[in-house]
Image 1 (spheres, rainbow, N blue to C red):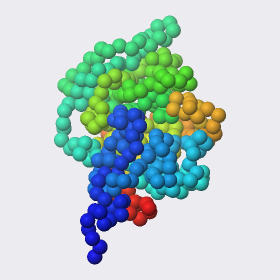
Image 2: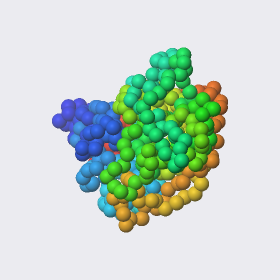
Image 3: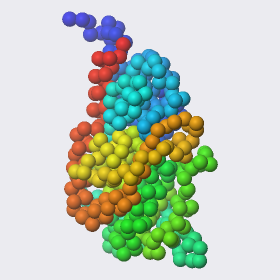
Length: 378
């Protein structure tokens, strides 16, 4: 029997936490990669304290490190110096295929959810009208000559604490995430006669580049030409941050995520764990676990060259391949089915919660990481 003392074991067998190389964005729990870094280090307690994991393009890419690669389009940036990497992970088969075509082999190590926060509450919990305790704006068109949009904070609560059927869009307001697609589909499909609401979270509007999509206040006036009697649209200005955002998911009924490109999605996983079925584009990493049994898949209208807006602006001059343009009409169908058959939507949400909590927790991610390190890392 070999000695069990830590001094007698190879360094990668020592107890500790697998470290994630931290840059300022990875210390921020309002970012997806910041949450990944935080939760992975928490779950990896007791694995190997001399292994460094680098998330995406946020750290030193050297052979001794494991690089966890995330990318959303069909080609990674040429400016990423991937050649020579010995240890790479990707969160989904979609990402694995992207990097394989670029000559990089990788192991799938998925991201997870923390079941201490994200789970299905079967009791009634707080009244869902309490969503409005957060500072919010109601986006509503006022009829006038030029169809100008007024944004105002007043809200009349529904009598008896009842709430409409709520679609939730909890992502940054950037083109790749498809907020314009969600807004257009909702405005065209529903009217003020429908007992529905679309809730946007004002996470971040891309302001660091002039190449950005238009803001809600810029887009809303256009809806005058689409629908004279809009259904309720709410923008949350203040809302719970991680991990209390689980409360926000439980205030809603269905997640809407018309991504143009997505490697994997923390909010989709978290919302599903809380019992929300998801409506996502049938492209990218999320389509690997959002099935018709657990949600809805939006048909892809066409594949289009990546527009160098928002997040992709720094990659000007590089070929990033293509991503998906969601079919607005099919998204309208999905949203109508979800709101018209509430019981079916609820059953999908229950199955989604069971599936995510059985397959995508941070503890399972850490177990997969441990298996890789003990087998492949030298």
